[in-house]
Image: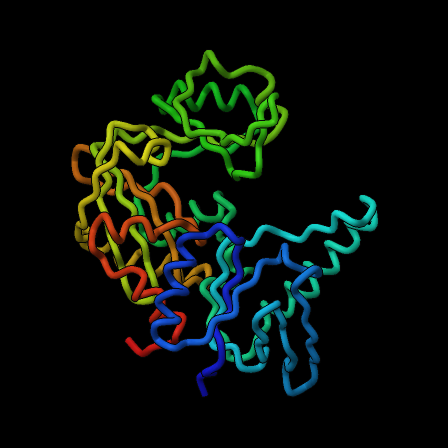
Length: 317
């Protein structure tokens, strides 16, 4: 039997995408309980009992209480993470670990709950090497990619596959010398720029696609929303004001590959990025299991918020 209780939404306070989805669910009279892991333990508490019959208990915020046994779905977006500023460093590390494996383990084990996406599956899919290997198995076209800490291997790859771009394998919080938050951008790199500091950690180098446009394909449940993004940028995410958007149909066979990829990771949502070359080939770049998508709806008219609300409401499609 499908649970008919609340939708749990796990995200930080500043998440406009989530705001839109919650407004849509409220308009359908679907109960929602929103919280951030950073709220624990100051304004978030829970008590879960686990027996041979499963999990029971409650999760309580300042304004809502959720019956853990009746949660219909959980929308896992972008929580801020656990913090314990009142504790010393060592005790805070201990408390953070207990919270992560305790609260995190409970919300990852709710009976009958639909996860969008399951936090463990998100973690698996965020490993770029795993994503690229799965994309190849799913049938996508991939640019040649090198993942290495060897400067000689990097130089040889660039000389053999050039032009080549550098991509970070993950995007943790990064601050410059003045303490200003910034990101490590995708950029072209030459063999002459490779020095021995490459050996200090792992790097991803990828043949640059000679592209004419980018495409963001957002899969929400059974729905596929494909939007061509035109610009003169190597990385279109660096300047949204220079972008134009056009809904386009995916080429033959690509939709089936999208769902093969998602099934391999156990996902029901994915934000896929492709580059289209001069021959019209769509080259797989990455899939973000927690990617942004709502900004595309006002630009294109595609009913993406409704599709996400349908998925969370567990409305038949």
